[in-house]
Image (cartoon, rainbow, N blue to C red; front, side):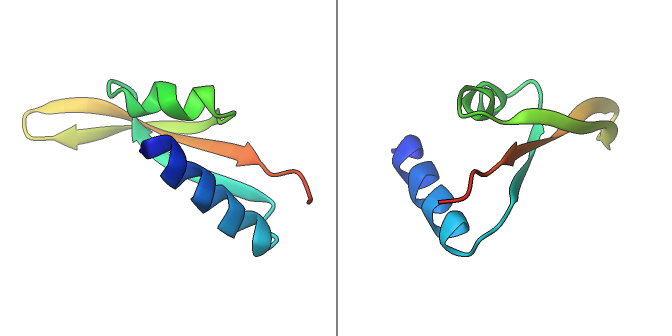
Length: 67
């Protein structure tokens, strides 16, 4: 289901002639691997305090090819 939603979102993004798509993810979650599988690369990362701990937030980007 997630892949279908992703494909629709990419089509809407291309239809609107966007050059890049960005996604913010926490590295420890499986979503990170999903975006990597779909061609996203790490653009930036920073520490995010949550409760008493810290986690790494990662911003990923994907260059969209013109249609």
